[in-house]
View 1 (cartoon, rainbow, N blue to C red):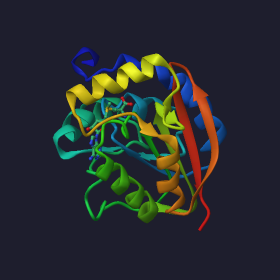
View 2: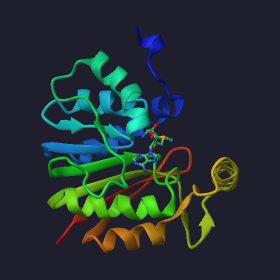
View 3: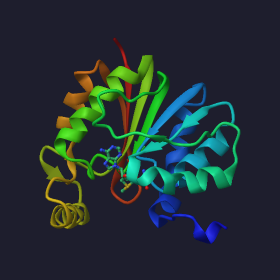
View 4: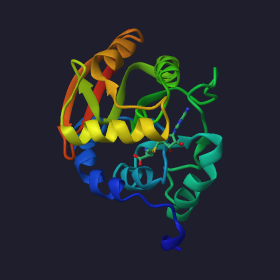
Length: 200
Ligand SMILES: C[S@@+](CC[C@H](N)C(=O)[O-])C[C@H]1O[C@@H](n2cnc3c(N)ncnc32)[C@H](O)[C@@H]1O
């Protein structure tokens, strides 16, 4: 069965470094919404480590059935079927949550979709809630490494609307939703895990 499930080697590589940050960050949270769940490897792994946390994964309509293959296979009590959720929906049609997590998604989305991501986060997070975003970022309009610059060129050749995002732009979108940056974790493979808190 497992061989038929969607698989990402990157998820296998990054799940433990991400888990160690989550253990310090969301251990006391009760509800979390994952945006752009992809293969479901993160959802299954993290929900398994936080049995008291209701982990609601989601992805766009075209990808949610694939995501659900792994979630249904896992059969975890705190991991319901994923929601069909495109960040561009004006209504995310989900309950408010204590935390929102998304990995490797903002560089795939268009800039308009990234803006809608943050608007949706603002509507969906409880007061005092946390936003955790994993992926590569630029700082001061500079790539952190040549490999991230190459990755950006690869992304844009595939889809000109995509690309590695500027941390400063992302943080300004977060601040507009009353989110204050708590920590920028440097992660393996030239990625970051950014953590904001809702302070409205
Ligand atoms: C590179 S994959 C990352 C998947 C997974 N989070 C991971 O870390 O492997 C990018 C994901 O972004 C999702 N995505 C793209 N556009 C989206 C949108 N407008 N709203 C929500 N998710 C979107 C895709 O469906 C895909 O699952």
